[in-house]
Image 1 (cartoon, one colour):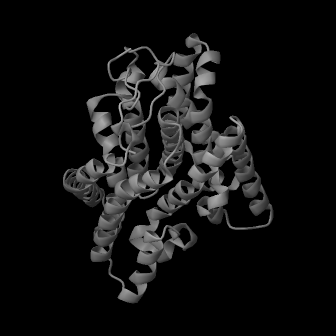
Image 2: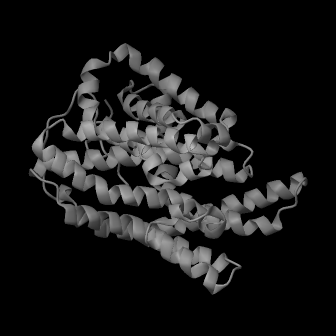
Image 3: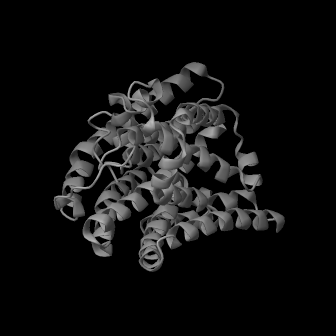
Length: 367
């Protein structure tokens, strides 16, 4: 086991999975929607978020005997709000609409209910629907987790499983009732399955570690990775939205990858790729890159010339370069200072010693 793998507070492979997720999103926008499967990068983020938040609460409770909700929410504020506010300012500066158009969108984004607004109204902030769903999850799930875990140890896992089934059932019902498929894509109760699969993995991974044979980890990890990458090229948005279990099945692939990759042998190419310096670099900056790229891409639409390959390559190169520059500036001068403030509210400031599990059960660095 590598030195990084022996630390309970950092999973480098998870940074690699974040990099893959944001790469999917960038590709779908850079290809102007031709690589439709790229939109599933958001679903990978959902699974990661559910896993990390639940694992964090489990480790805090194991170390301190409780989960401090006040500090939990303060950590969320310091991690999420500053870059989101910077993204909002950037989008407002690039927006060509009137103040009357911008104000309702700004309120919706900062209040985390952008997923209830139509995409055409959100404009260059259309991607914030996913953040709204995550924040709604962050508000509710910690309370449910604390109450459920306080009574019966398996209650949180049961609730997570029920929510997953309910999300699929809601999509079935909405499709049968004739609701437009796009509504299923952004409606919170219909999109909680990915988040809750991550939660369920965090709750059950120690038991899974004891039950999944080591010899199956490598073929399972590679099969899931190949399947996820294949969706980038072959998945169609309409199919995913119109087949109720489709998002859940994809989220299962992501959850399986989270479970298997850190448990591979140290020299395995897949594990090494996900833990590589390049993957970790983009993984740590994935939140900022996700936020800032879309307003920039949206503003650049005015310079696109359909059918002109040279123009396409030039515009995409400028879009990506500007996105990376803004992301790096945000990381150095905004996000890292806020992360240092966030650590003041971390239960890890206490010295914690805990037994190392059979294989690494970690949380990520940049929550």
